[in-house]
Length: 95
Image (cartoon, rainbow, N blue to C red; front, top):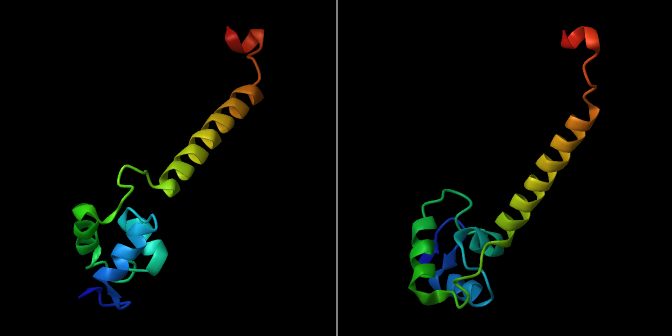
């Protein structure tokens, strides 16, 4: 049965991608584009993944982890750079 009619993706294809490690709708979309056009199949994909299709269900989405780590590093570096570039107030400015 078709899950994604926009790209012709079947339930079996979603299960195959889940067996190779795609454990979230975002990862399924990256593997076969399902869910990236109209989005009406995303709930079907979530339901399939929730029924034991993914052997590594506890695995986290690496895209989210990479983005969060990069963002934290950028914010920390930017804050440190900004703090270092602010000159100390002069005696006249402090008074």
